[in-house]
Amino acid sequence: MATDSWALAVDEQEAAVKSVSGFISRRGGRSRGPGIIKTSTTAEKTDEEEKEDRAAQSLLNKLIRSNLVDNTNQVEVLQRDPNSPLYSVKSFEELRLKPQLLQGVYAMGFNRPSKIQENALPMMLAEPPQNLIAQSQSGTGKTAAFVLAMLSRVEPAERYPQCLCLSPTYELALQTGKVIEQMGKFYPELKLAYAVRGNKLERGQKISEQIVIGTPGTVLDWCSKLKFIDPKKIKVFVLDEADVMIATQGHQDQSIRIQRMLPRNCQMLLFSATFEDSVWKFAQKVVPDPNIIKLKREEETLDTIKQYYVLCSSRDEKFQALCNLYGAITIAQAMIFCHTRKTASWLAAELSKEGHQVALLSGEMMVEQRAAVIERFREGKEKVLVTTNVCARGIDVEQVSVVINFDLPVDKDGNPDNETYLHRIGRTGRFGKRGLAVNMVDSKHSMNILNRIQEHFNKKIERLDTDDLDEIEKIAN
Ligand SMILES: Nc1ncnc2c1ncn2[C@@H]1O[C@H](COP(=O)(O)OP(=O)(O)OP(=O)(O)O)[C@@H](O)[C@H]1O
Image (tube, rainbow, N blue to C red; front, side):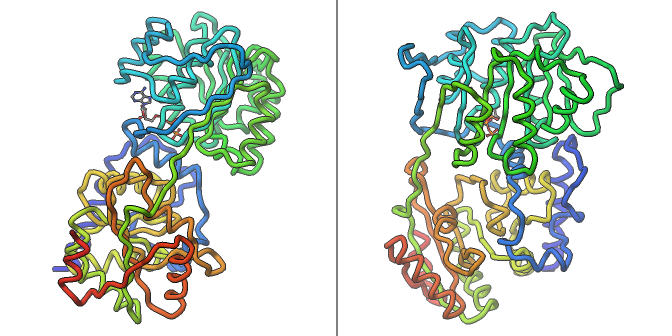
C-alpha cells in the first residue's frame, strides 16, 4: 500500500538517524521528533524565513565527509616576508614532524598533505613561528593542518595550557577535539580540555591540560574571571571557522578580548571557509602581520547543463508533470527544490504514495538526522532528495546531475534569485559533467521569473512537454 511505503521510508530514515553517533549535544536542539514530522507553525515558513544556520551547515558537512574534497583550485600565497623563499611540501616527511606525530598522521590514513596543507604547514611550523590567515573551502584539510601545528609546538611534559583553539559552537569544538585526540594519540601524556558551557570546574583550580579547545564565551571566562588558564603561557592561538564565528552575536568581541590577553610572541592562526569583507576585517584585527593563503574558487557555469521548463497551471499539475518525468530523472540522482518546508513535506509524501522511494531533507530535522539523510542519498540508497533551498545550501552532493526546481528560487522580495539558481544547477569546470535542470512554472508570475533568469544568464531555457513521451526520452539521453 502506498502509505505503507511512505511509513517504511520514515522508519528507514529514523533507523539511519539512530545509527549516527550520539555524541552531539542535544541542548538547544531544533528537532521536534523524527525528521518528517512537522508542526503547522514552522511548516508555514518559507525557506527564506528559515534562519540560515551556518554552524549547523558546517557541522553537517563535517559529519558526512569522510575524505578530502577533491580540489584542483589554485592556491594564492601572500607572504609577510616576500624575501623568504616560498616553501611547500609534497610529503609529511619533508615537514620533519616528530615521530609520534607522523605516526598519528598515518594512523589517520593520510598519505600526503592536501593542497592547503602543502602550503600552510611549512609556514605554521617555521621558526620563529609565523602568523597565518588561511581560507579554503570546507573539506580541504584546514582542521588537520592547524591540529598538526598545535601538536608540533606543544610540550607534552609541561602540565599547563599551551595551545588554545576557539570554535564557534559546542558541537564544532567537539569535532575538532576528536581530530586532536586521534592525531595526538601517540603522545600518551598529552591531554585536552574542553572549555564549553556545562564543563564546570572548581574555582581557584588551574588546569593541567596542554591543549584547550572551546567556545569564545567560556574560554574568555576561563582566562579572565575564573583564571583556570594563564593566557600569558599560550604559544599557539587558533581561531577556527572565522566566518561562522562572526555570524554569532558577541563571538567577535569575545575572541578579540581573548586575543588581547595573549603574549606578543604567541602564534596566531585563523581559518575560514569563506572570505567576505567582514571576515577579512575581523581576521586582520586578531592576526597581526599575517601570512595569507587563499584558495581560488572555481566559477560555476551553466554551460554543460540542459535547461528546460514545464508549463503547468497548478501545484497538482506540477506534481503530475513530475510523475511523468520520474522515470527519466531517476536514471541519475536528482534533487528537487521547493520553496517551503510544507511543500517539500507534501511532495515527498505524495511521491511516496505513488510508490517512489524519496528522501526528505528538512530544516526541522536535527543536524544528525540531516547528516544521515544526506549520507544515504550520497550512497545512492535514495535516488531522489526533496528539500528546501535553505536546508540544502552549502551541501555538495557531487553526483547529482538532475535538478528539479519544483518552485523557482526567489529572494524575500519575490525577485529571481539568480545566485541560488546558479548554485543549485551550475557545475564547476572540475565536475563539468552534463547536467539537466527542469523548472516548473505554474503562473504568469513564475513565467516572468523564469524569463528574467533566462535573460540574466543569457542562456535559453527550452520548453518541455511532459505529456510527450518522445520528448521526455530525449532529455534523458
Ligand atoms: N592529508 C590528508 N589526506 C587524507 N585525508 C585528509 C587529509 N587532511 C584531511 N583529511 C580528511 O579530509 C576531511 C576534511 O578535512 P578537514 O576536516 O581538515 O577539512 P576542513 O577544511 O577543516 O573542513 P571545514 O571547513 O569543514 O572545517 C576529513 O575527513 C579529514 O580527516
